Image 1 (cartoon, rainbow, N blue to C red):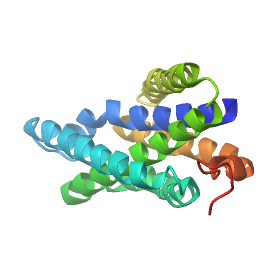
Image 2 (cartoon, rainbow, N blue to C red):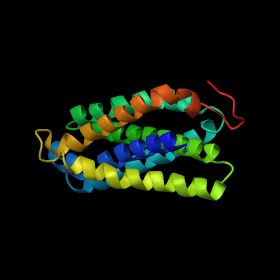
Image 3 (cartoon, rainbow, N blue to C red):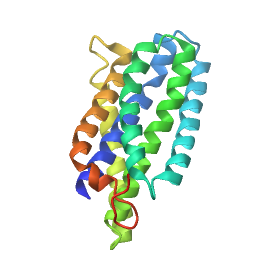
Image 4 (cartoon, rainbow, N blue to C red):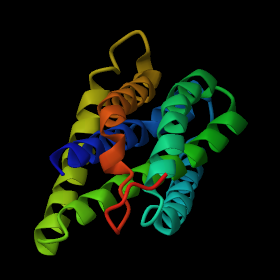
Length: 188
């Protein structure tokens, strides 16, 4: 359970590392007016809604495919967003996709925590929330350190990609634990 919470914290750290610093990407990198910051945040939120909705339907019985497909796509998406951030259509599209993938993967991992600690449901919810909060606090702090680098405003997006890479490196040897369904059998 601790390792799955670590994965949830890492994915949430990646999510909030990129999300927190989207405003300068919109205005400075893409060169759009401040009004577009709200549009980008709404797109990320809409993507998040889609991701949680889809993961909610899949992660109970089929968590393996959500992690196996969503994880690598999330990893590819953050650098793609950093590279294509100066193109508004790509920026809008990738922000939506990254919101969906981030929340699909994160909610699937938290579901795993809840199943791992089914004998203590109150504590499981507390642990899952704590993991998310650690990630939500650590991600922006890590991303902020990149702002003075040569990557500038895009540094947080690269940091998000790095955090997802770390999560996937930790997850690979644990794929059997992550892919365990509600019944306890490994699902593919």
